[in-house]
Length: 248
Ligand code: SAH
Image (cartoon, rainbow, N blue to C red; front, side, top):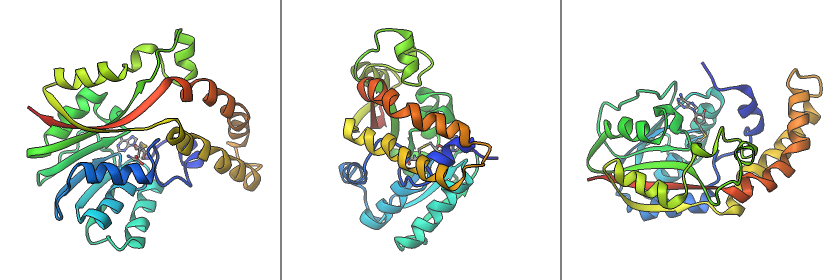
């Protein structure tokens, strides 16, 4: 049980597997006015940076579930490194359908909403773990600008234009799902670079170290084409943000 290997190659050096910087993760934690001891659930917790730094900086406790064995191991090491291993727990597994035993004050899915079949289903899933007055966090892409054609959307690695909404539409749809939007922290293009451009050096170093690996030709092709594709497409058209929601 694991995620496709391409991700653990290209993102092996990432602490955050999304276009959000450490500074903005801290901004988000501060914006949520987290209380020491608050319980946080994180579905698709990746390498655990959100839970570990919030445990260190804001005194939260938390549980993260992630399908990647490598990222879950990295999360546990990060918790040790930051001295918060007694506050956070990381579970390797499928988060689809996961509901926590004890209700939490923050239930998050940041950049992995396919876990609930899209953000609407993920909101439903997270709500089942949330205490009264708690906050849901959804990390999700949106269109900064609408791609002019379906082909342009595919160049952003979307299946179609209808995969994502414009920001005002996304915010409105949270309302239609019965939630107040109570905060948001958005990525800018420089933050996208920290996520996407950081993969290129990782790929280059991996290629140098693994020239005979069965993935080498795929990684070579990706590294060759990716900077131009990214600059022309994802960087121009795709936005990304973490949205804090409270059920009405
Ligand atoms: N929230 C983290 C990781 C986002 S990347 C961060 O911001 O850094 C998406 C993550 O979802 C990856 O770590 C991937 O391993 C995980 N994932 C994918 N499918 C999953 C599933 N079904 N259950 C749990 N985690 C999953």
